[in-house]
Image (cartoon, rainbow, N blue to C red):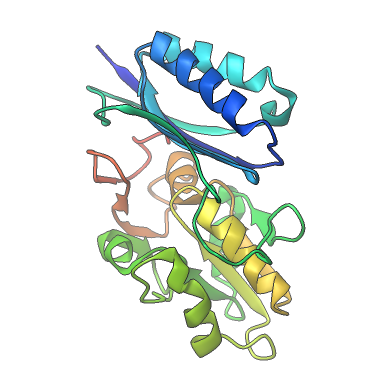
Amino acid sequence: MSIAVSAFYKFVAVRDLPTLRHRLFDALSERDMKGTILLAAEGINGTISGRPDAMAEFFLLLRADARFADLVSKDALTDAHPFKRLKVKIKREILSFGHPEADPTVCAGTYVAPADWNALIADPEVLLVDTRNTYEVAAGTFTGAIDPGTRSFGGFPAFVADKLDPAKHTKIAMFCTGGIRCEKASAYLKAHGFGDVYHLQGGILNYLAQVPASDSQWQGACFVFDERVGVTGTSDSE
């Protein structure tokens, strides 16, 4: 039996966290779904798995909430659940960073669609930065991308302070696995005086799903945080 895997996030104001947490946990449990969803005042972030029909039912329920009506998921099929259990947690942030000025709902970089990404990173004036951690970069990255050398996303501000200069680096393009880290990273750069900041819409997974292998500038595999470990090429539709 095929199992659907969906990754999603959205930065949006959420006030009823306990109520929402119970509602989502019950909806997922009733459908025998697994994975993790994080909820915070700044939004939602999750990766879940389940039968394709159960996944479709869950997203109908989630998008019926006006706050999540335009929520986009990155989806794939696999042979078995990549997760062992179900968790829906309330956290301080949906992505731990610790810098409140990095608020994507206030100011973030410019989205770049996968179809336009190759042209952007071919521009010699653009500095290409991989916002992921070193072990993820080691699995694969875009040609010419800078590895910030971080062990966790919390180390990104130190990289910015040491290596980036808003007066010198006037065009910066960033990417990450599914897009969420770049939302905060681009907001952080904008808050600290950087001008033209771009980020890959939907992340690497969206790029691999949309850009033909013959045109792809991606090298290697994309590390993912489940039992699949890495995905490659356009056969993975996440």
